[in-house]
Structures are given as structure tokens and as C-alpha cells.
Amino acid sequence: MSDMNVDPNETPVKLEGKGIAILVCWILGFGTLVSWNSMLTIGDYYYTDLASSGKGGIGSYIIICIFAAGFGVADAHVQGGMTGDLAFMKPEFIQSFFAGLAASGALISGLRLITKAAFDKSPNGLRKGTMLFLAISTFFEFLCIFLYAFVFAKLPIVKYYRAKAACEGSKTVASDLAAAGIQTDPNQRADVDAKTPDRLSNKELLFKNIDYALDMLLLHVVTLSIFPGFLYENTGKHGLGSWYPLILIAMYNISDLIARYIPLIESIKLESRKWLMIVVLSRFLFIPTFYFTAKYGDQGWMIMLISLLGVTNGYLTVCVMTVAPKGCTGPEANALGNILVLFLLGGIFLGVALDWLWIIGNGSF
Image (cartoon, rainbow, N blue to C red; front, side, top):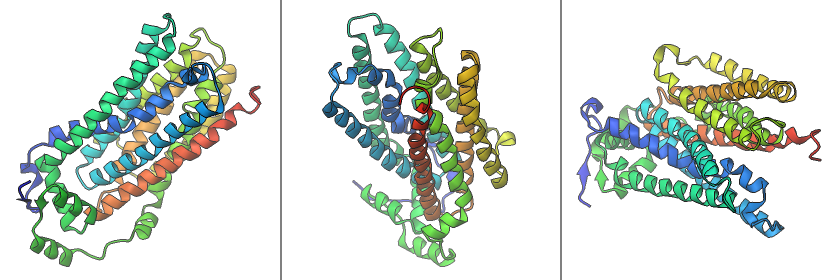
């Protein structure tokens, strides 16, 4: 590769590739969660025990758990790395990335409904539909690898922000640029270092932004304590039969996706740290509401409620992730992005762990 100098003082408005970068960020977000959402959406495949050809057994169960754990490890690395990378760039990039995360759930749910409809009546149809479903998901994963390696990193606006972060002291970004054959001017880096105040350590950065971190944790504790396990265990018998949980998951994912574009309207974007925390805490009311709706309400109320869960999850996630890095230097924004994803995934873990509580008293014990 030929070396290429990037001037971090160049005005980003003059750089090309913003629109393409936003599109690629969306696709990368989609690819980040496509495998995880595939695992979630084929719950009916595991509940009918077809993952082991109907034979069951502890061996098959352990293998499935290992694969699920592998998806979790991969998701944590990719989502954390991408969020940290985009946090010091334009807010539109991180918004598009998180919209892509939601889109993976929405599109995967739609694809699952299509494959179920196509193979529902055929012999061994559930297995055939799931295999096709997973093959299509795998294709998108390889597409994202190509886009990140050969398209995104070469966009002028991406080079600008990475060079700027490297000059501000971000060692990981500097290493990425060096690996790509792109060099920043060491004199400019020294000049920026002289003008930049002492940077916050990761511990100091966490305490300074602890409310944002707790927002991400609590937001996803509530969401994952309900979605998707509750939808398979506690929705009762309805006219939609085996389609009912799949439709509920699809409605959540579509609502979540749409809501992640609402913060693009500045007049209704929530930026107050106080009100973000208040609204996040108010979502705990969803837990008793879902319980009583499942017990006394019909499927129409449940569809409306799951849609509201998705709207609040998508809207608040994007608000926090785009507001938190404001005012940070490149290295601080990079680290803060990693910290917020750590708390996000911690919330997912706790939510999934609490999800089993829904089965108490419903005859599963």
C-alpha cells in the first residue's frame, strides 16, 4: 500500500463520502446483530426440538449453547468496536449504525415469517425454512466484512475523523491508520497534544458519564426481561396460534427500527440528562403492564404494548448514544462508546437472566 497523509485540520464539510458512510454504517449495524437476531427469531425451531432432529439429548443442547455463546462474544467485540469507532465521528453515523442494529431484527423477523409461510406445510418444513433462513443471514455477514474492509475505511470523511482522533492521542485509531498505510503528520500530533488538556482516564470518564451508562443498562434490562422470552412463555392461546409470538417479535422489531429515526428530528430529540434518566426509569412500568395484559387482555392490546416497548427502546437508545459523546475528544469518545456498549450488553445479560422469572407460576415448574 502506498502511504497517504491525512490533514486532520481539513474541513470535513469538504470531504466526500458522508452519504455512503451513513449507508455503510446502517449495513454494518445490520450485520452486527443479524446472527444474534437469527438465534432469537428461530425460537420455534428450538421449542419443537428440531435442532436435534427431534432426538433431544444433552449433547445437542450443549452444542447449541456453545454456538449461542460464540454469537454473544462476536457481537460484543463488533458492537463495542464499531460504537467506539463511530463515537468520535458524526452523530449521523452512530445513529445509522444503531438503526441498522434494529433493522436486523425487523428484516430477520420478516424473513422468518416468509420462510415459515413457504415451508409450513411441507414435510420437515420447519427445518428447511430455518436452514434457508440461516444461509441468507450468513450472506449478509460476509457482505459486512467486505464493506468494512474495502469501502468504509477508504472514505475521505472516515479518514479525516480517524486521523483527527489519532492526532488527539487515540492509539487504537493510530494503529488502524498505520495498518491501512495511512500516516498522520507527527508534528501536527505533537501540536494537538500541547493544546489538549489532560484527558480523562476510563474510570474518570465512567464516573463523569455514569448516568448515561445506567441509562443503557436499565433500558436493556427492562427490554430483555420481556423480549423475547415472555412472548413465547406467557402470551397464552390465541387465534393466531404458532404465528402469534413471531408476529409480536416482528412488531417489536419494526417499532424499534422506526423509533431510531425519530431523534433525527431535533425538535423532539431528548437531550436532557435528567429527563433521559426519568423516562428510562419509567419503563419499569412495562413489567407489571405486560403481566396483566397477558393475563386479562386480548392479542390486540398485547400487539400495541409490544410496539410501545420497541418505540421507547429504539428512541432512547439513539438519544443516549448520540448525546453522550458530545464535547469529548476523539480518544475519550472512543472509550466512552466502548463503555456504553459494555453497559448495554450488561443490561441485555441481566434482562435475559431475569427473563426466566416469567415462568414462575405458569405451570412450567
